[in-house]
Length: 263
Image (cartoon, rainbow, N blue to C red):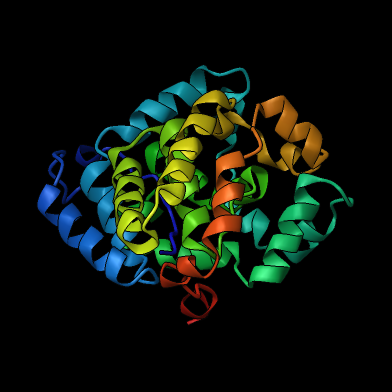
């Protein structure tokens, strides 16, 4: 099950939305997503249906943080930075930026690909502080993969990062996807390794510093081991154990995300 995640704003903040959770849409979308992990449109449907009030809460937390006011005033569009080859190429070996560059080179993913997928929700692009915060979470999703060690090209890694993200920024949509993936894994793998790794992702997200409050242009230049230590990002022991022991059984979950993004 591949996941491209966005943090949707409070539904009532945008035209055409009710401000109420839409469980019917969420259940329809999760059924489609679990049947086809490359159907990432369903992720955004879930987020829009369930993440009511999430962006206002997180935006308020951002501007109350030490450097959040400056970040909010600047409203840098991180996708534009991360899609600039010269920007990505500048980071020294051993830094977060170098690890992110390696991630892009080895997976074929791109910040532009995230933007293209997210446009299935029109309000994602509006000029509004809550929408900007949503784009910020979207655009740092793959950097969170790099920082946490959860692989992006396997469903186990994606599910663990979804759980980590729920702990970090809230939003019922994140929890809904993580729980559904963990429940499906019980039938696919016939054990609890996958589910325990997802639960560990949530716990590690709770323990870590709030990543959405970071200045990512500065973070990318930081040595990755030092950044992980400073932010309290723990080694995902249960995840690594599940990776080793599940082996081919995880194949029924795997998805090739590079082709849909390129398309």
